[in-house]
Image: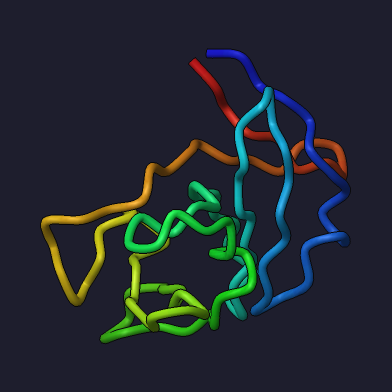
Length: 107
């Protein structure tokens, strides 16, 4: 796996999303109130729009989530599965914090 530096950790505020282009791929980075980092595809699978990073961060029964800002479908940040329609999901990416930088795993 190839780790790609994306941004400083502080560029991802708690409970918000940040969009990044990583090796030509639109990725949404999230940091929860519990300070966990997550990375999912930024393209909403229901609309094809690159808006997931603008979604509402929350949780459902302890599962960290993001709700798409367009149709409000809720996705698990851990697995990418849509909690409203489990047959649909967002691709997820390994993510880590290393020496002040957020890195995404590709490959």
